[in-house]
Image 1 (cartoon, rainbow, N blue to C red):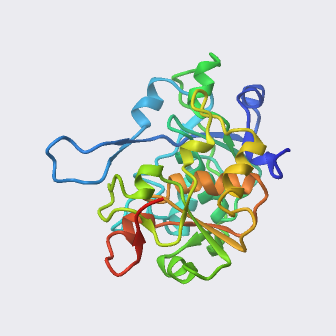
Image 2: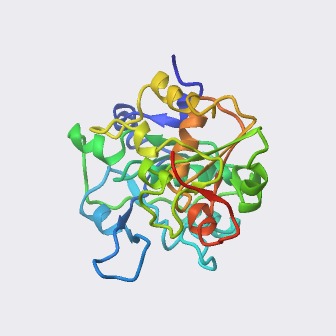
Length: 293
C-alpha cells in the first residue's frame, strides 16, 4: 500500500535536490534528553538544546528551531507546552517562515522533535511543512552535504490560524476513557506502558490506553519510517485506524507527535496530541492509570 498523505514526508534524496530553492526553509529541531545524574533526586529526564550540535555541522541552508527557549510556553509549569499563537508566530517569522514558504523539519533523535514542530505548525494552520524521513541520522549515513554556515532569510509573515481540535487537554482524555469512540494511544516504550519503568512518577499508562511505541515505527538503522503497510499494521493492531477519534500521548507531548504524524500519513482523520501527557496526568493522583500490557 501507499501513504495517503505522502506530501508530509520528504526523502533525503528529495531534500538534497531541492536545497537552495527559493522559499525552502529547513529546520533542525533537535533536543537531547539526558537521564538524571546518579544519586540525583530528580526523576525526569533533563532536556538540552541541540543548538551547539547544529553549529558543528548541519544540512546546508538549515536553521535551528529552539523548542526549549522559543517554541514552548515560558509560563507553563510543564516543559514543551504549546506556546501562545503570537509567540509561535513571532518565532516562525524570525526564521523567515510565512506565506509562500515550504518547511522541512528534521532532528538528530528519532524524528520526534521534528514531528513536534511539524505538528505545532499544523496546529497553527500552516500546512506547507514536511518531515525529513530518517532525519540527520539517515542524511549522515548517506554522506550527504554538511556545512557549518548559518543561513539567513528575510523575516516572514506568519499568520496563526489555530486548530484547537489538534491539541487535547486532560479533560478531553478523561472524557474519552471508556467512551468507545476514541482510541487513546501511548507512544512511550512498552516497559513504561506496562509500569516496569516509571520516569513520570506513577507507574503505568492512562487507563484504557493502548501502546504503539514511537520507536517501533522507525527503522532501527536509518530511523526512517517503516513502509506504509507495516506502519498501518502497528495502528490497525490497536484499532486506531478505525476509531472515531485518536488522542496520542507520551511523557511530554513529544513522542506522541510521531505517532500522530504517522497516523496523518496514513490518512487517519481526527487525531489529536495530549500536550500535557504523563507529565501532567501522572502528577494528579485523581486521574486513572493502569499497569500491565
